[in-house]
Length: 170
Picture 1: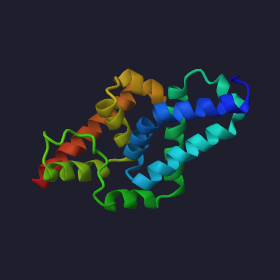
Picture 2 (picture 1 turned 60 degrees about the vertical axis):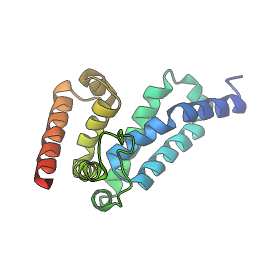
Picture 3 (picture 1 turned 180 degrees about the vertical axis):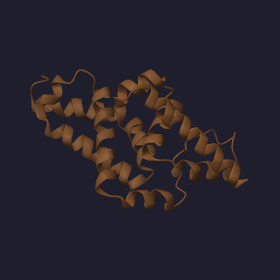
Picture 4 (picture 1 turned 45 degrees about the vertical axis):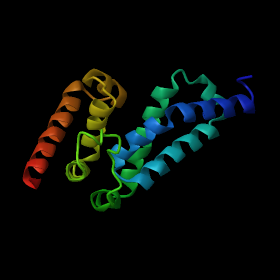
C-alpha cells in the first residue's frame, strides 16, 4: 500500500499531524514572524507531497522535516531581508506563547519577547532547540550540521544579549 497515491497521502497526513506544530514553533523562532513561519511550513509539506513515492524512502520524517523547515526558513531569510524588520516590528502576537502564564506577567513576557526578536535567526534557532525542545548541544550540532563549539557560542551570545536587553529594559 505504501507504493500508491493513497499510501503517500496517508504518510504525508500522518507526518503533518505528528510534526506540524513542532515544526511551526521551530520556524517561528527562526523567522520571528507568524505568517512567514506558516509559509515555511506549507512550503515544506508541498515539497513533500511533490516528492510522491520518494517520501516512502525517508527513514526519519522528524529528521527530514526538521532539516527541510530549517532550510526553508533560511531560504526565506536570504530572499527577503525585510523579514528582520518585520520580526522586530511585528505586533505582540507572542513567539513564546507556551510559557507558563502563572510564572510571568504580561510585561515580563513582552520584554522577553522583544529581546528574543532582537537576536539573530541563528541565535533564536539554537535558543529554541536548547530551551523549548530540551536538546543537548550535541543533538543541536547534529541537527544543524555545525560544530558543538559554534552551537555553544551561539547559545552563549544569545543568553548574553537577552540578559543585556532585559537588564536595560528595567
